[in-house]
Image (cartoon, rainbow, N blue to C red; front, side, top):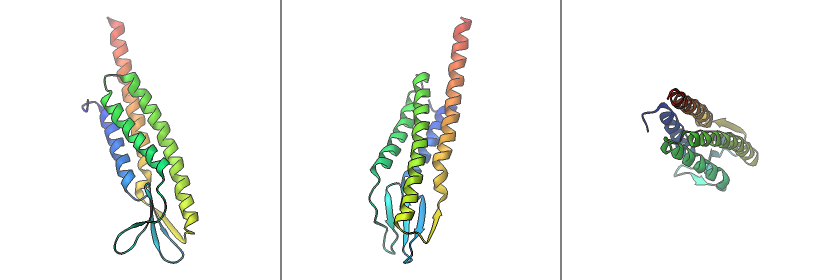
Length: 156
């Protein structure tokens, strides 16, 4: 299961998306010198004692992120059903593209709502793109295995 390269790609992509769920994607400096962090779980005002949730939680984004992580785990454990695994990879790639678009919309909306004087993106913002590349590599490896199995069946 984990010995196959596609399983490693899928596991790495799932790990990246779990990290993405908990790390801040951007920081915003409001005109009144208040610092805000934009995470997938909401907008937080950074105070000396602890961060405070100021914006509401974006449930659709969290649900989409949880679905992507569950699809990765399902694809890892369905290693004997390569055609299903390929379909799950395609579905996951489509959901990752949707998540990326929704995330950009969410961050730009937060910048506007906070009347950002300055904003900066964190390096964590590229994790969905890396996960998309890893999922594509896993899909290619699964397809290669499927073609190898079919060619061996043809010889018999």
